[in-house]
Image 1 (cartoon, chains in turn blue, purple):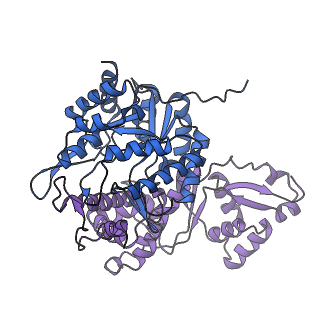
Image 2 (tube, rainbow over the protein chains, first blue to last red):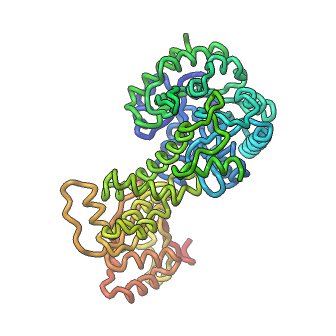
Image 3 (cartoon, rainbow over the protein chains, first blue to last red):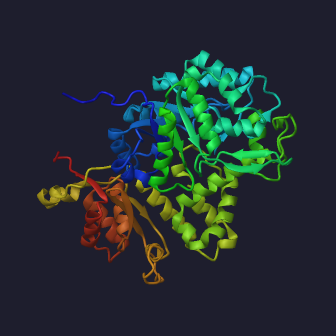
Amino acid sequence: MLDTSPRFEPLPSAPGVGYKPQHFQDLLDAPGPVAWIEVHAENYMGDGGRPLAQLATLSEQFAISIHGVGLSIGGEAALDIDHLSRLKKLCDWIKPASFSEHLAWSTHGAEFMNDLLPLPYTPATLDRVAAHINQVQDTLGRQMLLENPSSYLTFAQSTLSETDFLFELTQRTSCGLLLDVNNVFISSTNLGLSPQAYIDAYPTNKVGEMHVGGHDEDHDDRGAPLLIDSHGKPVVDPVWALLDYALAQTGPKPVLVEWDNDVPDWPTLRAEALRAAHALTS
Amino acid sequence: MTSQSRFRAGLLDPAQPVPDGLCDGGGRPAGRRYDVYRNNVAVSLIEAMKTAFPLVLKLIGTQNFDRLAGIYVRDHPPSSPLMMFYGARFPDFLEGFAPLAHIGYLSDAARLDIALRQSYHAADAAPFDPEPLQKFSSEALLEATIRLAPSTRILRSCWPLHDIWVFNQSTDAEKPRSISQDILVTRVGFDPIPHALPVGGALWLETLASGVSFGEAHDIALAAHTDFDLATCLTLALSTQALAAINHKDHR
């Protein structure tokens, strides 16, 4: 009998880590509490070689989450059809347990800015983002999760709160949500809001996955705190506490530890995953 | 101008003012909060360039590379979300960059970095089966065509490019000699490696890749380089798995 059924669907309500190639062997040999991994879609859009071979091997042992960083769902222009096709090819091949992208834009005209840029929350941007999400879900033939951004500023023209904007998107597209708890903490601190109030207003029944990660601390022109989403440090205690707060409302969910810069050795990252495991069982 | 055009305009140009309509949480002008995006974009693109061009980075050092990449990313931001292929215009940019004109081989070093990266991400292929080479009659062999492996790249250089690469990989390599070296990049398994090509080897392989027969490619290489040696080139191509398959219309 051919063993072709998807092994891991949906993502398990367990800790995951953002996959880094330097952890390949350690992850296979001593995963600890890690039950799934997340990879950035764009790093696996080559034609072959080690990246695809590693992903294929890992997919036999771990549930895979494909996390796009280049689709520019919040962009003013139409989605890049070629990029969407590459994404479909990748998803059809690896059959991930989850696909997610960001409430952000990165492509403008012929240029890709390689960063997640913010958009105002208005009825017009809501229409556009909803249309893009529907296009992605129709093309991939699956539900996607949309991640809340980390905000450093707001737009004077915004008329909707971020949580209302996200709720409306779930209503119009049936998409799920990726709740990045670190981003909630960063945005709330930067904009002088309560992170708990954000979670209270957030459609927690739509959450399919959560993120935690590290951030840097800076300040704005007036000396007000300005946190930067750097993914280069351990998760701070207030973010773990906010994860507990969110999990109390959502129930157990897949929780990913993101560490993309100054990547630590495997035992250090695994220790962060262990902390996520405790959060899920306490 | 659209809202995203205004937001984009200042990202890679610190001389541009912070766009209107951006605020802090209390409705006051965003000020340096916008600079977080400026910094994210510039730093992430420069980091991508460092990953993409390790040989160039080694040759000119981090400080010089950061300055150089800072100019390049402003002039040539990525045109695709596939950052693994970012920097395609860097060799030409280096060629036209007057302050570094004294390091003439820098643009070829960048081309080598690109070739290695392309090879790394190229499609996998089954190892070349040399059996037909022995089984074919000499007549059939001359008429046969050979395809190169998807991960094979050929570079021409009037600099000692292979010696420069070797010199920058190890601590005890000999100083590059003053010669021209064409390069064959191949991938056995997953790791691309550059090899110095013998005289005429680049032309021979390029000719084969264009679909010309084995016999004709040999004649073309020999006509251009009287000291072209088929045996040496074929041995190198076989031992480095540069070839994908040999085909003859009568042999399937």
